[in-house]
Image 1 (cartoon, one colour):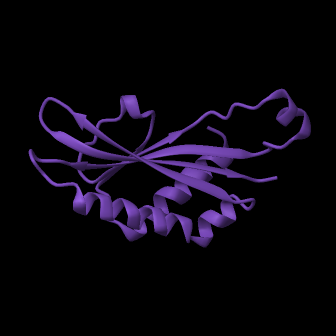
Image 2: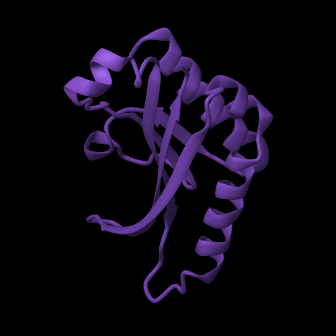
Length: 136
């Protein structure tokens, strides 16, 4: 990870942690992530794929992309209502935060994808925030 990506991931972690209880966080690939406590964050840097035209036009200079996985324990038959509300709050906090807007001054987009994860000892609700920003 280069300095810009580390700064980007740290800014996201700081913003979420300042507004939401996070008991465990790690920068790693999600397939290697094991939440040691809940709620948890996995901060995963993503690769950017450019077309030749974009490369030649320098359209993707300093593009930053990350997937942030917000994970909560999900006991059997737990409704997702409060989890969905928490995810929407996190999304709104990220979208309106001047620190993140300053990190990627050409704007950014946030998509949310809901997952579930069943592991040996418990179930998890997982929300993946796909965040991409660009400095031109």
